[in-house]
Amino acid sequence: MTDKDDFGPITRNRRRATITSAKSETVKLRNGATAAACDLRSGPKARESLSKNLQINEDNKQKCDRYDKMSCHKLQESMLSSASSFKNYRGILNWCVVMLVLSNARLFLENLLRYGILVDPIQVVSLFLKDPYSWPAACLVIVSNVFILVALYTERKLAMGSFSEKVGLLIYIFNLTIILCFPMVVVLKLPSITPVGGAFSLGVYTILFLKLYSYKDVNRWCRERTRAKARSLSRSLSCPSSPSASSTMQSHVSYPGNLSLRDMYYFVCAPTLCYELNFPRSESIRMGFVFRRLFEMLLLTQLLVGLTQQWIVPVIRSSMKPLQEMDYSRMTERLLRLAVPNHLIWLIFFYWFFHSSMNFVAELLRFGDREFYRDWWNSETITYFWQNWNIPVHKWCLRHFYKPLLRRGAGKLLSQSAVFFASAFFHEYLVSVPLRMVRLWAFMGMMAQLPLAWFVARFLRGNYGNAAVWLSLIIGQPIAVLMYVHDYYVTHCQDDPAIAEANLTVDRGLD
Ligand SMILES: CC(C)(COP(=O)(O)OP(=O)(O)OC[C@H]1O[C@@H](n2cnc3c(N)ncnc32)[C@H](O)[C@@H]1OP(=O)(O)O)[C@@H](O)C(=O)NCCC(=O)NCCS
Image (cartoon, rainbow, N blue to C red; front, side):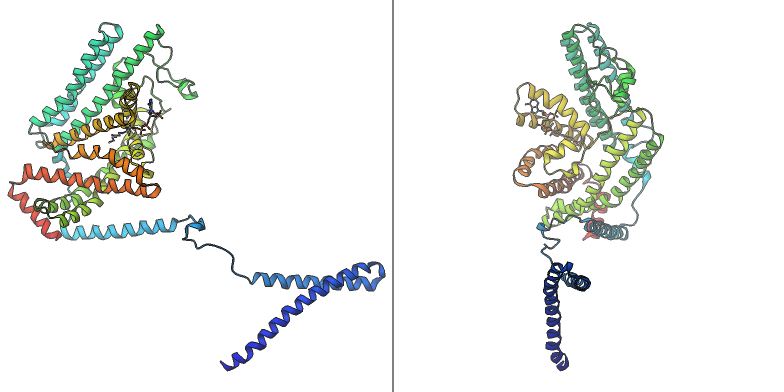
């Protein structure tokens, strides 16, 4: 310690001396170099002195450079401060994924240890069929062909002029009303139809309703155009003004040439709700693409069923008692417990339906427009979410409902409210009728989107807005699910002692 202290000043002095000598040499060199330059023509002695000075100059420059390299600080912000403009958080994203996998692996193990394996693929069949010899949902779907044929027949008569526009409209109103009422009555009255079978057939009829409504509108627009021009259309109503190279190769249909069975069934099967006389078509069917989508569909169906049986059902069963007793703290706990698997299943369903299934059908039909969804996951407002998550429905709403309302002079807010009201009606229809009880939870959930959209747009921006959209999806859906399941249980299963005992067992297991 003493030695070090003693040597300290000496070393410092030496260092100071070295730096001072280096500086003085530089000064000397400059002076010397100038002097030598002045005496350049004085002879070999002067030249020798010049080269010597240059050598010293070079040595000093190297010393100065070495000194400069020793400095290790510069003016800069810390990486995590927003002023640093550092944006690469890839590692943190990976960390999130690792944490997510680990925490879910724990949940998965806990679930397995508590309940054992509950997955039973055969049980899925019983969700659709009560009796293997009676297929009411499938029969209902087959009957829907009658409504398709009525629409086609009406359009043909309208095109020929055998029906006036008024008669055509009346037939359509009748046809479309029956499309919604007939399956509803069958599902409500037929005890052999299961809730899942009922929801499936009502879904098919709802899609058909929207498709035939679009079919009616587009054919009417064609007739109006034909009348206005007083000659047959040379090109399709929907075809782009400057057709692309690929589309010019294909033959274009014009009204009333589109009123054929083939055209009608192509539209009924195509993954769109908006009718066009000439859909964009892909060149060929890519079999590799078809098999990849088919594989995804099969795999994800199994995953959806497995997750529902293993994860959702026990949580829902265990929630019945807290819901009946109105035990708010345990109800909240069960809600949060349900939120994770429910959201996971919703995400898987999104990919299964909007990516795998729709692309599968589109590829088989060579249907060219594959924009079934857009980047709704980046939504910073609720409005953006509804514009981008379900493109077929959004396109239909804009083309056949929202814009016609605006054109008739309705205000923007009124038109938006009307669209959300119609959407709320269909959501309620698709849930309440198969469950055979009207509770309006789905209806209110959809209608709540309007004030929620206003709130998020008004008070939240950027990432906060995005987080609000995610939160509404993660928490909003399980609330509705719990409400319906609870009400269904109270209405249909409460008196069944076996179910009540099973629920209690699961509940005890969780607590
Ligand atoms: C209601 C809804 C249709 C509004 O859509 P939006 O895109 O927010 O509506 P905007 O006001 O931005 O306008 C959309 C279009 O109308 C046009 N428009 C707006 N005001 C107009 C007016 N006064 N007159 C004519 N056109 C008008 C816009 O130019 C725009 O046209 P573009 O599509 O060609 O660009 C949409 O939120 C929606 O689809 N909601 C329901 C979704 C749903 O229920 N989905 C179910 C999924 S399960």
